[in-house]
Length: 244
Image (cartoon, rainbow, N blue to C red; front, side, top):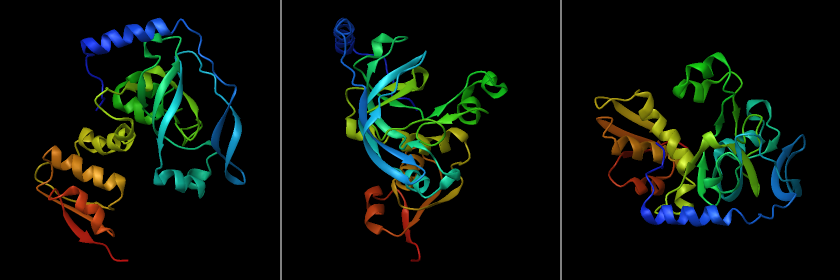
């Protein structure tokens, strides 16, 4: 489900120009604006420290961040109460990256699950390690500062470049779209199944769209409280009004 494709000639030229530009030192501030969740709740801080990338990590300037209902639930105490910078849906631009300098200046999206790389599950590799590492950190959700800030850090293994053909606004939906695609990846729905998607929010609409485009489910229904939202799907699914 990655957006990566082999770069066109124009992109390779642009990459060379970016590589030359890397010789010029980039002025990185020491503080930034960030929305931080603490014991008393969330607050906007104007002088939060800019994170320093570790080995194999990139420093990323956040261009646009999405708001997920999970973020709102974390503010209400979901998962025992998160502490740190909130947010996990984003598009950013790589500012510094010692281990992969060609990424500097590129727009990227990021996989939110950060694996330790050394536990027994990580040694097995694949999607199991990506989602079930015993010491997994999760961007803006579990032990890792998130996207509601001007800068963040992520391992380069978690980064996916955004093609020039995709706008920053559209690419902000990559993370929830990936969640919808995960259903296809798990192969839990077949072409013979009748499927009802509960909820007509962002993720519900994306799940319905993905299942329809993959020609899964013999009959697709979406149940929600907002008929106007379901109209965005056209004739992809049958809408059922949920009780208030």
